[in-house]
Amino acid sequence: MSIEDRLSDLLEGDIEIKQAKIKKSINQFYLNYGHSSIADCANVPVFVEGVSMLAAKALQDHPLYNGQERSTRYQDFSTVPFYAESEFSKQTVEVWRSLYKAYLPKIEEWVRQEYATQREDILAKPEIVDRTPEEHAAYLVTRNKSWDRTCKAIAFDVARGLLPCGATTSLSMYMSLRKYRDHLTELATHPLKEVREIAVQINDSLYARYPNTFKPIRVSTTGEPARNFYLTRSLSRSDSYADVVNVVDLTNEGKQQYLGHDNLWFGIAGGLDFGSYRDLQRHRNGKNQMPLVSAVAGRINHFYEKILREVDEQLYQQVLDTFDSLIAHSDLQNPAVIELQYAHPMMTQVPTGVFWSSTQLKYVLELRSKTSVHPTLRAWCDDLYFKLPVHIAEQIDFDSDPDYWQSDRGEQDLKRKSETGPKSGD
Image (cartoon, rainbow, N blue to C red):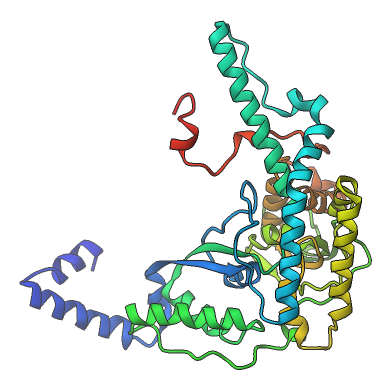
């Protein structure tokens, strides 16, 4: 019957009759139906707070994940808790905190001095309007505030590379009951103990609310071995790069010329810093294997290396010393390398491996080539774009503007409207 007739039938009678009808319906068409797909009809929001960057990526590592994560842009992470388990990792994440706090104001000042002559070009072009002296003075105050926010945002973009993967964040999830059940059951065997415990906590909360859909799960004492879970390929380059390693034409016609249809799939490998990999991992319409964050597999991404050295040579030597200590404690054959990921900075170069359809490839390159995107991810997209066949690249609206700094981040922030005031037209 139609949904209107179905609801009318279920809602006839007094409250006890209604409840009895609904229970009978659930038992007949859900619990005893013999197929779990009907649990896809119920979607639930879950909010997860105070978990590491690594745990956030694990929770998001599902093709049907929907949600949002706290940004590292426009926010000072110097006082947030850092997660780590071993004593060495706990000590190392605090070293990264001190370097982050020391570098952040220096990077902001460096941005101001380096791009002072381009200030008006970077800021959004002003409208040509007649203003009174008072209006012009107010306009200059607004422009100065926009420049301040722009410099801070760019400084955060650079300083985020110093944040350890154990820096905590928050995220939301919105999935169906069926997807939660499957995903959390898998995460209970994840290599990271933190992730296994979070999976059980979420499952317990959902089980208390939806006992007919969920059942208790236990924390596995040992997770899946790293060699079976993580991408562990070693990298010889420290810049962002991508290579097309395989093209699959599902039509078997060998034309490989139509972009926008999912009969053409691309295998793409390369290297990228973990901070920007977090953005790349959010594109889940295809296969994307999680990389192991390890100093013995990838060095510091060249973008950070260049700027941090230029901003303060002495502080940069401390960066190198701390990174070298990670190398000394790293052994890809030792299970402890999994926990050691927390102590690695997000500027650590990690291997990337994705398998995308042509539609997804087009979407990612058009979105992530914009000037507002972090420069290391833009460089990854740039390298990939120019390695595509010409007839495919021509169909992508790619932003090839090379200057990352020519972007007014002062027009973007995460403050409440009550703090910034309404904008014109709002």
